[in-house]
Image (cartoon, rainbow, N blue to C red):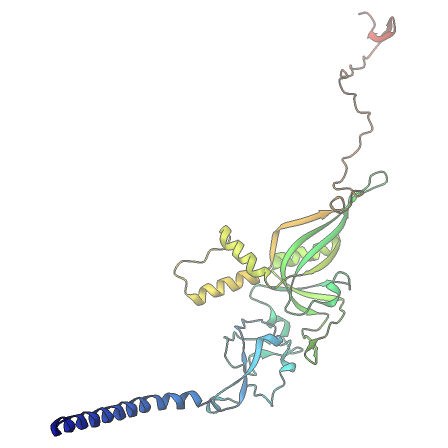
Length: 331
């Protein structure tokens, strides 16, 4: 190989090495800031924020709040800071103002039990608070807590008298009622992270004015019982209402407006479409319906001719063989 070829080969090798070094430095310079950004973590105290949207009147439960890291320069005195605030003491309070998911809670946002106007703050617009008496049997053995939703069942004995048996019936008269309080408590007690089940004699429910009237009448008609609803029931009934056309979302509504309409529909107490069961549906020895009133007159036999009208005035008894009839005199 001659001298010129060796020189050209050496120059090409130097250029290739230089190009590789330059490319390496360029890529290293562009990735370094990204690595630093991934390692950096926000510094600041942990403040109490809403895990989900909290409309006005929401009763605060353990799954509604969480502590989250917050920039130190943005922390305000009205925030609940971890180590300074006890979240257990906030359970059972009520949201006075709407709170969006991820927003820090302020001390003025929540109304404490015992504060003046506490129960009124828990009510939604146009709603009323009504109280019903329950027992351990009719109150789901104490497994109903403020914030739960229940159906209301009416049991009554219908008919029956000296000679006629009546029958028993149970009817689901109202659905999707929000529990505001049990006895005089709106709080859910927890010990070591477990909810404490307590007995109670009264339950305060949220209802529309019309439904409130029905509840008070139902208490006089028979015995009221609570049936605890599943959390998934509201969504299933909302889908049914949309599919049947009972609920219509206006065209052009924003996502926020649409979500508000759906939330109001899911949380609304429901009446109508009642279902019932009678004693005859449970046992063959019970009556299904009330018997019709008995008549004092004997029922005519099948195929018998209608009875003739009894003649008035003088009559004559005429006998022909085994048959005897009474006819007016002179005919």
